[in-house]
Length: 460
Image 1 (tube, rainbow, N blue to C red):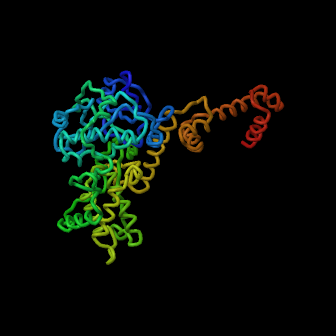
Image 2 (cartoon, rainbow, N blue to C red; image 1 turned 135 degrees about the horizontal axis):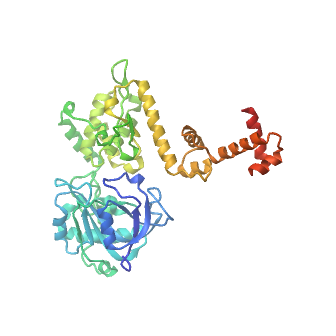
Image 3 (cartoon, rainbow, N blue to C red; image 1 turned 120 degrees about the vertical axis):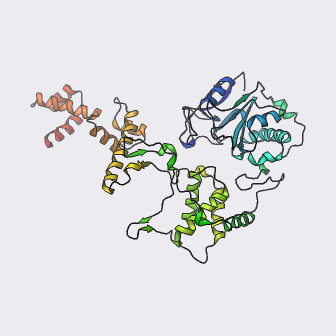
């Protein structure tokens, strides 16, 4: 925070619920602490300042594009004590602390933000100063909290979501200068590199220790799965129940609602689900595990393994060379995978209103086509500039010219080229004996264009 201002990326839109981060667009701004707090309470999202011009999103929000930052943030997920209790234990108070959108009375989730009065210009420097803050925090509240500090926030490429007006927000007027970090005299442990992933380990790692070995995880998972009655387990196949549907239409566009679903092939002839074949079993199970993570972003490793085990038991072909250990290996591999690279896996674009699910296949196809045209028209006409050509509009919208022309035609709208042709038709009707040069003068078109239009006119 330099001269009372924080330079950071702020989302163009604000959100009432946790957004699909891939869709969020940002702009770099300079705001003061009060404006930062207001933006947090009104659902805006944030990044560190990036070396970009204008808007940017997930693709541009990288360590290589990092410019600078004036703040450091730390996430507490699934904490066993609320924000105010942690705040009161800290000797050096954060500048801002707030509960996130996912916070609840049974599942405490909050974020601490430390404003600084100097620039951090590299990811390595950011991790250095962050590690000092982590040491100071853990010295105050104890190592038990290490497992619920989210290590995803340890790099400058990460985004930070705001909250809402009902969140608990605590602030102070403390801004940390470089002397605080330079004069930190306590023993410093490298929590950044040594911290175990909370995703794979439910117990605290000692300083310098790495994550549990794969074999230890497999043994634990296998024992847990052996002790459950898998026939009574309720598998997770979708989060469609979260979708907001349009009651006036048969199908609703839901791609922007982050709705996901695991799909199985159902044989109408045999009246049963076709099982996943042995040849594709590993890849399909791994993909389904990733989709499960998209459905339930906060799923535990154990629950992910249970879901995969159910799919294996009841939707997969079995063989002697594939055992419970293989299921656990796939679950662990998927759990360790960065899901941000697979955020589109299993995502639904359109959902049918349950009231219409008994329509015939032909009726459903017709209704889905109408829904797709509605979405196409919404995208095209929301930003269409009638002063530009179809090609220019298509490039800006991200479509090819064909669907744009089709949409214009369906709505009885003419393009600039069509308007020119219509002007030519009027001119030739009124002056049937005019030469090419005379028609060009009357319409303002080139001789070459007049020649092309004449051929078209007489063909029609």
